[in-house]
Figure 1 (cartoon, rainbow, N blue to C red):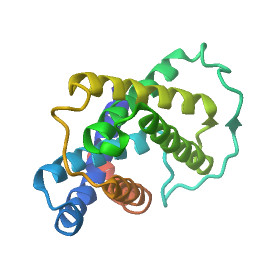
Figure 2: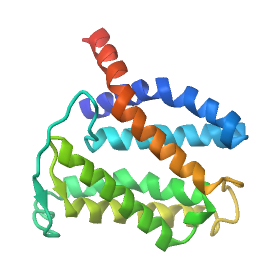
Figure 3: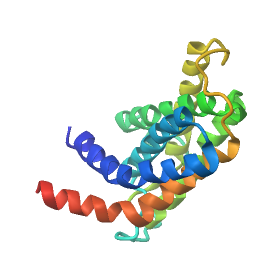
Length: 197
């Protein structure tokens, strides 16, 4: 329960920057209030991913080369963690094809899930977390499950999808949220935690 509460606090700290920046991007790049609202939701979800996986930030650098490159080692004994990793990336697979036509094939969504997971796992070298190939597997599986769910719910992407989204918007959002979580969010987060505690 504390982890959920903590993640909500971290998302709130990120929202202080994500919402106004997305509003500015709407004027410059997006040109659609509806798309921008959905992009904000995706940005907040992406911030939650980065928080939950222990993405490094400017306040906490700790180089640790704890790496597992042997697949499926300890996955069975740590099945709860494996399940949570799958669950964490299901919305990622849901958002991708819902928002961007580029990801309306399972291959492209799975590859982006794998790539994003790789970036996250490599970044964990600079934290206290273990870089683990099992996380790549479970995160990619979660992305594919999310893709299958949204494909079914939208009738193979014939309804309920966000139209006219540019591929560059995905990269703008992910890079912006990554920079916010690395450079800015930790200071607001510290302030909020001081108020609460």
